[in-house]
Image 1 (cartoon, one colour):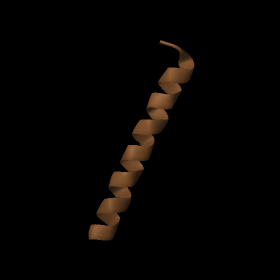
Image 2: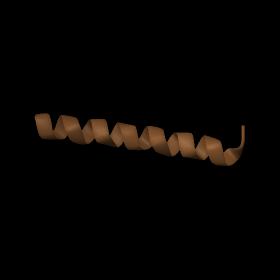
Image 3: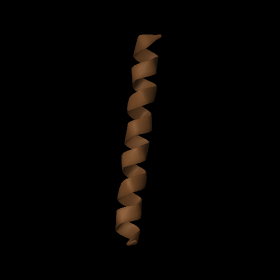
Image 4: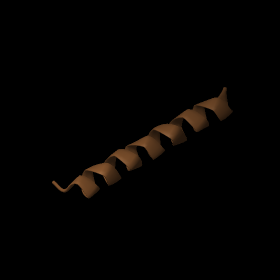
Length: 28
């Protein structure tokens, strides 16, 4: 696995986590 692909996967997961946190913040 290339370092770039791994970094891209980590960034995608961070974006997903942020989206979930923002969604929860708006719902509560």
